Length: 376
Image (cartoon, rainbow, N blue to C red):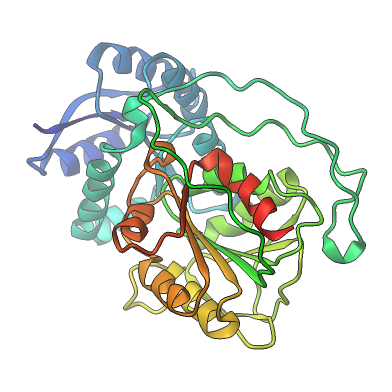
């Protein structure tokens, strides 16, 4: 059965072009279009599409507000279109917090210049997110709850002290309508020299949920690999830094790993770890599908730290991270995977589990707490 898609955009050109691209795929059926957020909500309720493509800047009601209403009234996987600017990144991250599953850059030049590449990428995204957990999820509006007072920390552990601002409650994440599989036992404590986290689709919200549970005095350095364009990672790091008690920054070549600091791999590049405890930022190799690539960062961590790495693979399409995790496992390090029930896309964690590399499988809301238990 074809995947039913609702296309939402105030640009008549873009609506027609996206509809033409999707309709050319026999596995996809465009069931309707809308020109603003209000129409999108009405059409979503009437047509019950499997996926919605959504612009963010529209008259009457913007895309983010529309996503929030749709998630409350008829949860549906939403693919956002965004501009490749810092402001576009900020708005896209807000949309993901509101419940959108994934995003694509809205680039008219690419549509004209590389129509086949755009068609392939768009159709692959639509088909993949149609199988996401958004379809079987229920959503509730977040209840504002003040976070516990941040733990005072020495200046070497980050920029937040006892006067750090209280972070808002994290955005709601999907709750499966069926019972989740039993979780692994609580981890044993170990003197880890590095926590490495890799993720893709669904990762921005998942990382926010995990990292906001860590205290300012978290004793291990952290590296983060999120599949994301170059224009987005700086804005994402800034967002996490404001929400978390640890410090978060986009990694730069030569940055030193230290406790209480999370370094986010810059989009379009690769991040490796050297023997001095510093990160190396390298140009993105065109032969690699992912820039940044979890396998590359995990592999370099295995070479540098042996059995002293705790690696976590979160929600995402594909299998990036599996081979890097294999190298870490061979060196004696520990590997955790997010469970299927709490993933937006159960791809990357599934690859870890199927390869029998996972030492533990945890629900998303348990991972932050278990990181604290394992490392402190």
